[in-house]
Length: 338
Length: 159
Ligand SMILES: NC(=O)c1ccc[n+]([C@@H]2O[C@H](COP(=O)([O-])OP(=O)(O)OC[C@H]3O[C@@H](n4cnc5c(N)ncnc54)[C@H](OP(=O)(O)O)[C@@H]3O)[C@@H](O)[C@H]2O)c1
Image 1: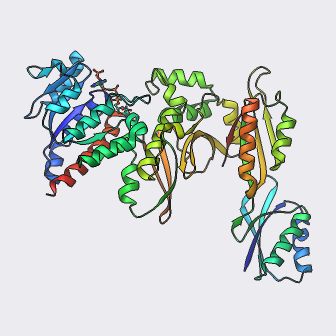
Image 2 (image 1 turned 120 degrees about the vertical axis):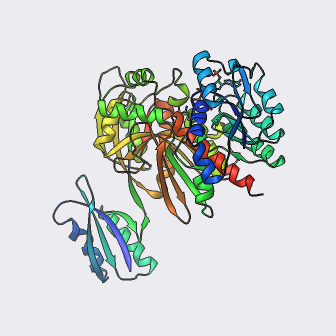
Image 3 (image 1 turned 135 degrees about the horizontal axis):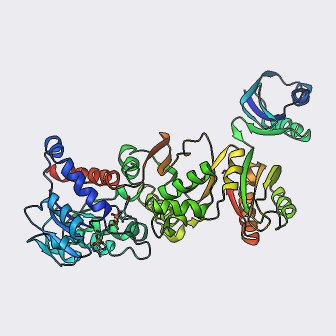
C-alpha cells in the first residue's frame, strides 16, 4: 500500500513513528506492506516511489526542519503537485486546521480524490466547512474517505457510531471534545486559580497553544460537533449553525458554587435534532461526563443500545496517529478484498 | 398500578398530609416507598403506589396534592416537575437580582439561592435551584437567554 503523507508536524511524524513501530505487525496480521512514497511539509517534499527511508526522513526533519532537504530525493514541489503526480493508494492529510476556509487541506483532499487516492485526514477545518462537498467528491471518484482522528483524537467515536453501532439510530451526542479547556477547568477547580493564570501555565506546559482562541472560545468543539452531526447523524449543517459560548468567563468562585450544589462545570458540545450547541454546563459530580485533566469523553444516546460512553485522549502525537492507523488498516482491508 | 413521586419536606406530618386526601377519596394505597437515595437538601422523595385509576380521578388527586403545596414530580414515570440548577456569572446583584428572580419565577420557582461576591467590582456568581414544570422548561430557557443578553449574565445550566 503506497501512502502519500501531507503535513509533517506533530501528527505527521507520529504517523511515521507508528507505521515504523507496527511494520511487522501489519505484515503478519493483515499482509499489509506500507510504503511511504512521499512526505510533504511547507518547504516541499521527499519522493521515492520505492518507499522513503522513514528513519532518515524523521532525522532530516529534526535536524534541518525541512523535508525538502532529504538527500537526493528532496524537491521544492508544492503539495498539490505531489498529490497529483505521485502514484499512490492513500493520501494522509495532516496539515494545520483552518476553520476560516479549510485551506490548504480542502484542496489537497479534493486533489487526492481526483487523482484516484483514498483519503484519510485528521483535519477538522475542511470537514466542518465543506463536508457535503468532500463526500460528493469521494463518491464521484469512488474513493474511501476516513477522518476518525478529526474528532476526539484517539478516542473512538465516528467509526464507533457508524460501524460498531451500525443499526442504531444516534439520537443525541453530548461530550467534552476539547482537552485544553477540560485541563483548564479541572485545574481551576482543584487549585482555585483564575482562568488567566491557568491558561498561561497550560501554554508554558505546551498543553494550550500559543493562540488558544479556538479552544477557549468553543470554536474547536463546535467544529467537532458539526463533523459528528454531518457524519453520524446525517445532518447538513456548518459551524455557523452552532450556538457557541466559551469558557473565558468561568471563575473559580463559580466552580466552587457548582461544587456546593453537587456539580462541576465543563465545556460541553451537544448535538440532537434542532439543537447544536457548545457551552459551559453544570455536570453532576458523579456523571460519567465528569472526566478530569485533558481527557475527552462522549455520550451517545441511541435508540437500541441506549447510552454508550467513550473516554480517551483527544490529542497527542502517537495517540492521534493510532486513529489514523486504524483508518489506514480499514482502507487496506476494504480495497484488498478484490 | 399508578406511581406518584412526591417531593416532601423532611418533617413529621408531611407524609400524612399527602396521604389523607387520597384515602379520603376512597382510593387504595398499595404502598409507600421512601426514595432515600434521592434526598436533596431538606426534601425527601416518596413514591406512592396506587390502584389503577381513571385518568380523571388521577388528575383530581394531583390537583388536590398540589393545592396542599405538595410537589408532584412524576406520574407513572412521566416527569412533571423537575429541579434544575444554574450557576450565574456576572454582575448578578447590581443588575437587579430581584428582577432576575421575578422573571424566572414566571416560569418556575426559585427555591434556593446562594451568592458569592469576591470583590465589589469583579463579577460575582450565584447558584439557583429552580423548580419547574416540564412544560415550561423551554420558556424558562428562553427567558434566561433574554436576561443573559440584557444584563450580560452567563447562565450555566444543568439541563
Ligand atoms: N496535535 C494533535 O494532538 C491533534 C489531534 C487531533 C487532530 N489534529 C489535527 O491534525 C492536523 C495536524 O496537526 P499537527 O499538530 O501535526 O500540526 P503541526 O505540528 O502544526 O504540523 C502541520 C504540518 O503541516 C505542514 N504544512 C503547513 N502548511 C502546509 C502546506 N501549505 N502544504 C504542505 N504542508 C503544510 C507543516 O509544515 P512545516 O513543518 O514546514 O511547518 C507541518 O509539517 C491538524 O489539522 C490538527 O487539527 C491534531
